[in-house]
Length: 399
Image (cartoon, rainbow, N blue to C red; front, side, top):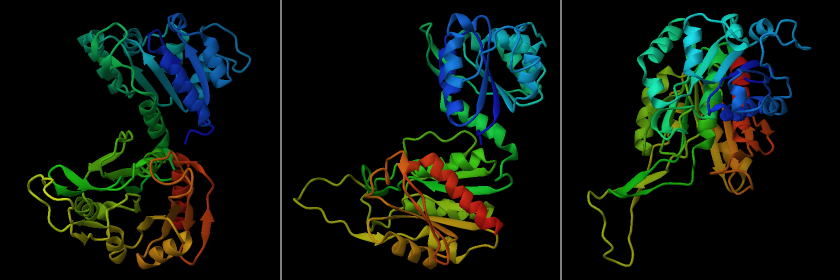
């Protein structure tokens, strides 16, 4: 979604300006062409050379500075931009924009823009709570500007509260969501499951598995970035929900089954990336089980196979994708599951392979199609694997 995009990044004079360097680096690493405008005050906190090194492009600091790239920088940096992002945005900038002032390169470019403008405020907690600042944000929202609310935390001034610049990944998520309005999955609803379910033994213990949820969350973020409405049914994880994604938290396999069956009529694509427990305890103790004996026997009963249930009641126009984590006979076992569950695609991986499986940021998968076609993908980041899977989904839907 960011490949080849022209992004104008405005940096204003706050201590959080150093975080803008990380944002510029992340945008550049994902293929965006990043062009930075710094206010005079921003230069007191971080030097232009930093952004030039990170983006490979000149940094613009003055309304009247000539450029070998642009005939009129204040117009070209606005008209060519797919999005303008201001991070951090000070109270001073909010006030000037809210009242139509254009007294420097950044405010002039913003007022000349026809693209989305994303403002990421960062300031002292009392400044952010000031009614004048609130009024300016309300006015800018009415004008069509987009905002990423600052986070709560300890600030450089020593105060604690809301005012910290949002995390880079949060800002990145909103950028991709704004750029995805014309994405190739626009108009589709994608239902993704993620995480490892927990099957209770007693009030303090449960049976679970090694799933971190990273693959499912990567899929949810990728589908959202491509314009889809994404519903994420997630077992407990330590991961933040990607911005723009509708989260439905569950714990047990039974709760996930209920949620998926309820949401299934809304879905065009279902991707079952969750590691759902195959069995649950036949009897769940209402009290904590005491260590009275040398052994403890648990009777387990089989859970309903959620994906098989969807396959049996499959609706026309719905694409079903499953995951198969195997330790032997990968293609044969995954192919059998694909056929048995009436799926359109099976994503299979050998969890013993280095760099694949649970808890890693990378994966090695095979995409298995009906009819026996197999597409083997090399080791890659799970975020990229997610896009490869979505490419396959769109290929299936367009065939």
